[in-house]
Length: 287
Image 1 (cartoon, rainbow, N blue to C red):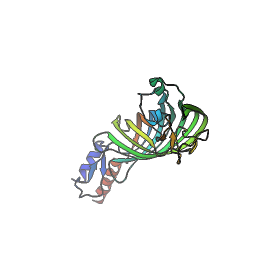
Image 2 (image 1 turned 90 degrees about the vertical axis):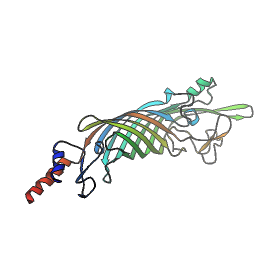
Image 3 (image 1 turned 45 degrees about the vertical axis):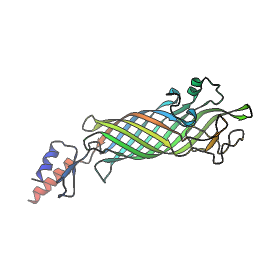
Image 4 (image 1 turned 60 degrees about the vertical axis):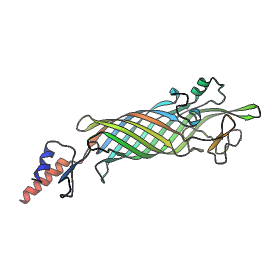
């Protein structure tokens, strides 16, 4: 009976049957796993909301939601079922998208002169690797954690800022094109829905956070040089600080973005039905 039961379930199309090598396990000869834990390929489309030095000196959503910091992206990813368990996939991804920042909202809200105005636009490419875990075998909720490398091709930046000299202000303009690299961490959560036997859809919210903010180790082009600005004024001994609009030394906030979007996945699974049928036929021949 122990040999026949899993064979019958497999014939009925129960895709979540997983063969176990331990016949005496508490689940018998087979156990179950989450439908979404499988090999697969995914296409994603999402919105990106930049935060960093250009976004109100690094404080996201200060002054409200800023449409100037919103952009679009897309990605391709491959999932591979982790051999160690029935709850997690390894996920290899690559994304591309526009990224832009603008602190104009700050000055509109405060009605101040724009002598500290900053903006940039860039194209970002990011390979990444992470683990996607489904805590429950029956629900589509999942958690994601990963590491990535952001490559930012900055096609336009303009940074107006000033420093105080007594009661006077000296204004400086930086503008041009550049590029940056930034190691990042990724944290996300999402929910998946089964569409057919092979297709599913997921909604995902993620934060992408940079680990550094220095010369060429950034997404937005700021700071342009470690330890000094364009006219040679010191920004800080490490290059990780700068003189803010009040003449005080401030720490650069790490660059990154919030990401929310939809993903469509095609699944292919180890053929459990085939394996069980093969085992059953071999067993019958031996009899």
